[in-house]
Image (cartoon, rainbow, N blue to C red):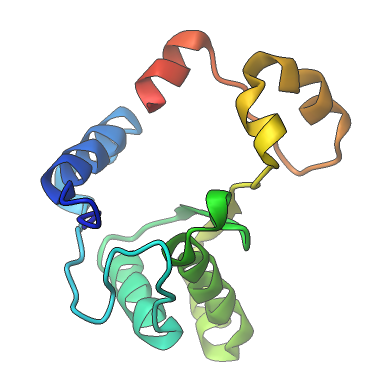
Length: 148
């Protein structure tokens, strides 16, 4: 629930607001408070448990798109990396891979960048445009503020 710094309620509200901006109804938002999945940037979560929880949520809500972190977890956050690993695990299990195909669920993976690129803001646009990728989203200043 994002409670590592005792900010669980703040993080829950941030999640709900973010989902609202993306058009995701509150009824489709699930905050997981599980003793085996503690919010801690240094703790790796159990891949099979996390995979089962994510898949259950995808099936229950007919989700067709998942956005997750990459193997760098944006800032090396072990929980973020665990989410990526769980989704990769899904695709490495044949039955789950077929299920994902049947559900029509796609997965987008955010790209972690180095600290320099992370903090140069708009100056990174030319670099990002020159690098090969499947998709590139550039936010306006207003959208950036909303995302914060």
